[in-house]
Length: 383
Image 1 (tube, rainbow, N blue to C red):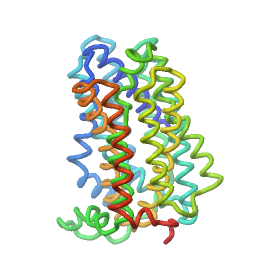
Image 2 (image 1 turned 30 degrees about the vertical axis):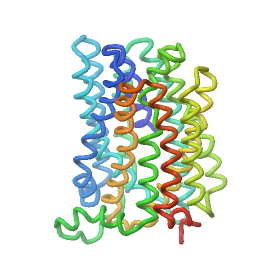
Image 3 (image 1 turned 180 degrees about the horizontal axis):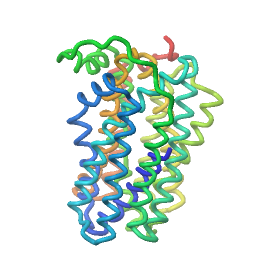
């Protein structure tokens, strides 16, 4: 939660500052690209490191790096030398660290939670994530409204706190006998996913749905130019999806998904696309908030199903490599999706770009039912 709060605070501060400095939707897209590129190029290395090294240590070192990068943003903001190029470089550093952090954290959890409790544990994880995602953007907006330096510094300190808390997690059991390092072993995660259509379908559906339907990168434009609000409004807009996600994840803790998980995932993606479409054309702040709440509620259903499928159907000795590929898909849908949103908004305008994305998400859901019938027919996690 501390790490996600820190990341959300940084996202609000970076998004608002770079748009204020440049006035360009394209630069908002470049922020997403700067976070995506290291994840793309480091995926195979990240996965292999997660399977060969102590995952707890990997996560701790990543959060230390993120904290130092955020504090550098604070120092640059305070002294006045921070420009759009400096923001993009430090965002690239943050993205590189998060590329290693995500798979390490994902691969840690199955070793701490009994298999039969994993689906509700995944919902608990989603709840904690969404609580942080609610508080983080709102805090980021308030702190940045007071002073940009304070926002960056607070994020940096919370990254460092996250690293300290990770060190308090009990050491996982020692890994079994390690296979020799070969080209085949490095690419084993990709091969495993390709041979399991249910996993491939789940993570690729999430990739294309959020890639097309994600409007997060354009929220500064909606907040300032369309909905006529300020940094506090941007914070509320960024928090709204997490409100819906938290409500649904709490429901899934009490009522875990047991049957028809494939159908539930496709339904959730369709609702996500519809909510994005309505948000695109809304000029009402309350309606926009409501659609973002619905969007987040639908997204968390997909997240819990995908997390459970990937972790439960993957052997422990391969979880790092499979989680790295999964993180690449997630990162692609989020960071590259922000770049796509900024680029299409620069070409067609903010509202048409978001509208195209929402409709595209609905088309993807329909196509994936045809491409991955095994996922559509998936009934339960254990069979």
